[in-house]
Length: 287
Length: 349
Image (cartoon, rainbow over all chains, first blue to last red; front, side):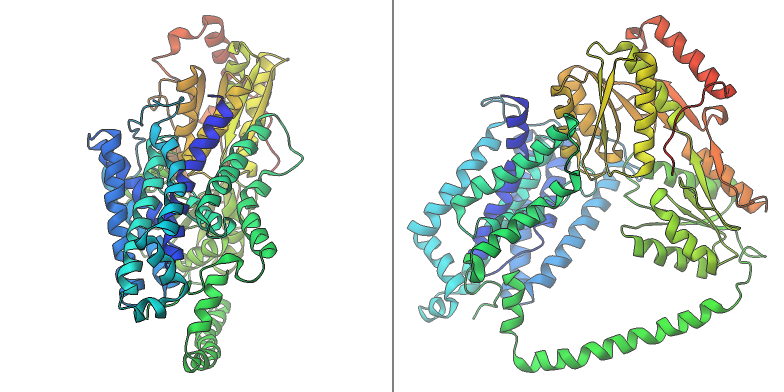
């Protein structure tokens, strides 16, 4: 596979996974702005597991398990206890950065030593298969949210939570499930990053990708299938801007490309009218 | 963000009204200590070093676990503690407002010496140095000086010039790539010197820089390095701190050479041919000794190849693959730089 396409896919896949999880959570009516923290926790878990001698696939599975825990923890505070999700997410971001940094220093020593891990083998079209499999997640989510009973309940909890409650269902339980899935996918995104293109952990290694994924959800206007082009666009633009710099192209400063995801999300909101397709009950406490 | 908008909308009106009242009250509460601090600032500062223990603080812009720029500074701080018997403290800071806040906090506690680890600290140091005459502020890089502020100027350029020279002599494609974290003058200056060395080795060779905007984004650094290799670069220089491993990884995958920077990174990857090294602990201890013994004059403290704080270190495992004339030329050029016969270009900052 050509260098550009390979790098574009490797950079897109973690964004796509994290955004897909966040999308499900937001469609259920809650939101976790601490996605960066979840990705970081996943990245560190994959690193620590791989250092401890597990194979790369087991390391990826360990990320998923920690992600499920992170999702449940978020739901405990922001869904079940109805704390302000913005505050819980902010605290989670800070906590994850501090805790992974602390744990990393226990592993690598205070002033660090660069520790590499064994990455996933490139076994499908020159890429590890989990990278390509990530692109199947949005269609699966699309079917889940439009064709299945649990999926329709998730959507209902995000649009008309009172109606869901009137049916005798627990909005808290539905959102907790969505949050767990979001945690798993977000942590898998971070784990994938460490087990493919960034074969080590450094403090803050996710470098803002969690926030990028939040922007992708808005840019995709909360529609799963649109996540694929949206994350490919952002991953591709990132890969492209390195290429442009490498060609000596300096007409556009690189800082513009760093700001691009935010600009795209704003543009998507500006052209799509009121709410931009956001779930009606987004961010409201469960009835 | 529609999300936060909605959040505000669902809060009961009563809460919102108390919020409106609470806000000015909060500001009033904040203003009191601020005003007091303002008054206190005007009062003359007693020299903190008189009598009390020698106390030294370090502000780093990134985590000390980076095995590079920040780790070296922290090692320096620990060396100061051991060799000079100082009380030391370290804090990691992110934004310019935090730089100033932490400088002020240490100075007001009577620290004798505060290191701000990088070019980006010099403005904050200058603002605080005016108010605390008894504390010396050292920034590692920069040019601002006063009675109690000066930069340590690491002439790492002298070593990165030698990296460039090696690449110029050995590159088959006559193309080299440079990967940087954030585009700041001190990083660009090492690239400038690398490029000058490259052209000294091969006048027809070219170097291209790619910046990722982050010192932590290993994946970005690798993507940037791969982009450069795909454009034909067969030597990679980097000044990307913790993200450097991405560059080394790309070099290993594509079977080309890379250079280490700031620390001896020769052991990190089989692709690292040599490193441009700063002996940060040594520079920190020497500077702290100046301050402790009252010999600090407010002049920039310069370290180059001659002082041995800066060095060019071959990777012993790969030295066999370097043609002997190149090794000799590096040695000769090194001697010329030390004697001042060859001036290595550096950025004006």
